[in-house]
Length: 390
Image 1 (tube, helix red, strand yellow):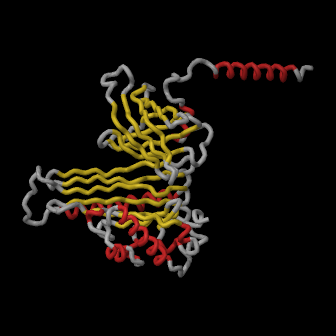
Image 2 (cartoon, helix red, strand yellow):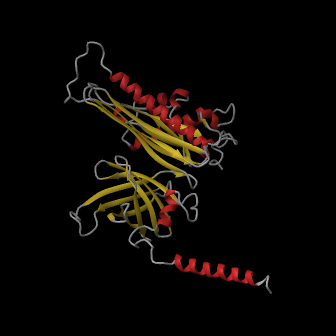
Image 3 (tube, rainbow, N blue to C red):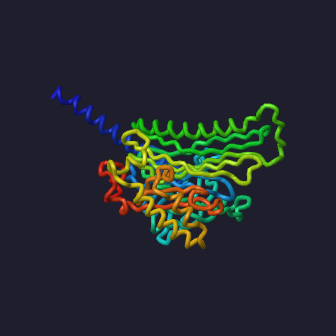
């Protein structure tokens, strides 16, 4: 009995301590119910809680008002929505909490770092029947009772085809410069992807950053005054370089990205614009060529060209014949030069035709999606397209 008594006392002390801890964990120190539950926000920002599935976290890009670019990240669980957004010009994340009803009516409140509500998004949640991507559009307003609480600002955000695993994130980086003496402005945006343990994200980021900084450096070099050149009038119409981007696909093994590049040089009749794409194999850490998608020796260019020519002619008829047949046949002919700007989507191979390529400048850029079903006999079964061409 002497040897058992101390053990019983120890057990009683431990049980008593556990009971106290359980009681203290339910003490009234919970955050206000008006602020987003941190456990839900942690899903978005990489904290604790249950891990969302691949498709739960959705990325959006859009605008509020006339020119404020914003990026939004949302987690939808049933009819409840949590997440955050930020303005590209500011960079500070703003927490979000809201809901969407069965008819697609959305109400999302925003909160500052202290948990105070600072505004409300009200709009409609729509899913595109063709690509399954979501658009949320409506009005933003300040909380009731504040100054100008009756003022509404229109907003619209569109889901990007990003399907990255939990723990990864996508942010927009910017290069903004203005030179009053040389009268030019630069506004370039590019993505940066992070993910624990994936060193190929770093390789992708380096490739993208190097591509954009090279374009910026080239523009600045062209803007440098020549010897003996007179100063440019500060109030004159200057030059500019604008670079934006869109994801065509972003998943753990594959990234497909389109850059829209527009430059204007003082005195020119109109801007010069073109597209440039990056298709990156994250699994193997390499930049993809169009030939990498198909079987060795496959005649993929004639197949892609035939589909594009037919589709462009159909598009032209719908646009009152803005594209002429000769330009289409020349600009979409089966040559490597004509198919430099391509992307990988979930339903097909995207082909960009820049201004002048298949029609006059006034027609603008053209775009064709070549369904994988058209190319299924040519696709490399061990290549990146095999997962889509089933």
